[in-house]
Length: 333
Image (spheres, rainbow, N blue to C red):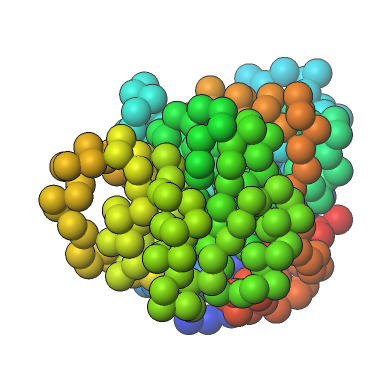
């Protein structure tokens, strides 16, 4: 089988042939049709220096395919099932926070940039019928992250005003689609006027270009503030989100593309009685609820571009450029 291996920081992935995995115990063997990229893959490539395997690690957290074989404790009826994979592994028993054994598929364990994946049967779920394999592969990590941020953490209610920062990436677009489907009034930010217009076509009420030094003042004037703000950037601009939050507002962060948060107004934080939440991935129940939400409303992901597995490094460069609008998907078989 072919797979894309991570050999060390700041090195391109290496495509090579290895012996096909064999499922053990409760595992199933999935022949993957598609995988998808996440910013996590870039962070591993750029920052991870320790690799436990001398042969390297197969990256990739998102995937969909067909169960081809099962281990001794897995149901043979699963063979032939079209599935999507939950990359949130070993969450633990506390739904409010992951446990010490939690990990995300694709590092340190082998992931989905491969023709086959052997994984516990508890992490495979029926592929939503209205989605193709390519579309299903675009769901798991970013869809789960967005669902937990919006519904479990921010506790979105209909007709609330929501601001989503940095539209264009997978999680931000899921947030937009989920919130619009839930009848929220959604606004977005982007460094691209073109992306802002595309977001409006998907149901955003309005948008603000964060390259404009006065974008926050314009948002305040136009909207009067927001009930919910979902941010994946952090960095210096986070203090503006405190100013834009309405009294009793909820701010959720799940990323650091702009670096660490440097300064916020403590007075505004307590006087407005704001809630700031951090979130990562989600539970099995949230994954199931997210899939049900997609199916009940026939929501499909926004896919920017599809690359063959042999061009996975080009796909990573495309995502790193920041020009994508939607998920970057890998065609495996």
